[in-house]
Image 1: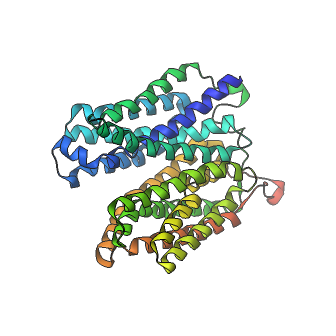
Image 2 (image 1 turned 135 degrees about the vertical axis):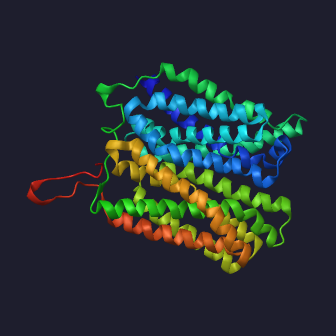
Length: 400
């Protein structure tokens, strides 16, 4: 039984790592893909859009399939699709085929959004919030893995896309492990409904609305920081290499925060972490803008990453605890809201930065963090750990 649970945990964390590595494939090798496909940069970036659309358009269906077919079958399908993405992008070397495989990769990522919370609810019922934070940390490590492997291949005078083939080791191991995993229905391990501690809503519509708005605002903030930190630093007069390092510092903070909050979430409620982390992130970004010195920007982006990096997993934890009877579907709603925000944010920020200047990017992120913090307060006020009493001695949970 213990070995089975370890295998379940391995599959969940490996999926986080794999999707973290896959989602940055296009961005980490953009100039090389331009040469590979012999098409302009503005066309190659559409591979990233195809990946995002694949996730957003299918993740709700994926969530429903988890309930009908079971987590393991959907996980296996998702792993296969991501493997096809990693294999197909460099092998066929045809642009429109690349778009197709990128879309498949996005569809595969939907398995992480819907299956992993279910699997972690089985293995870590008492530390569910913290386990999702650990998953977020593995996602961050995966995001480091791809550019690192690309750099290794180039340093060794090898084609950059050999890094994609190296990453295929992960899905191969996962597919080899899946047949040895069992989810026992009689022990409550299918869907995890009996395992996750429910979070109840005082005002269900308000709570769900706050989650959707919060997720959109949060994803807009972190997408903006990820997109513009390097350019913002160069605009300050920082050298190109140090500007790239500023983005690395932000990512290091995100991963470090995700690991640290595995332990914090054992002692502090997720709703509280959600509020105060955004408050602290708002303060450090505002302080960096006010002081307006390069050294303080480095400190500010590290601390911003430290507080913000974990919050997507916290939002997933809260949403799936509210929707504890349909964890995979609740996870799909969060992924959809975040995915739509990720698609819209570059368009909005690109328009604003083009007219106001690159310096506005940090202010835009600050506004989004503030809006997310407001939504977090509303969410905290509209949820409770105990089932609220209702008229006629009837009670209701937050999952239906």
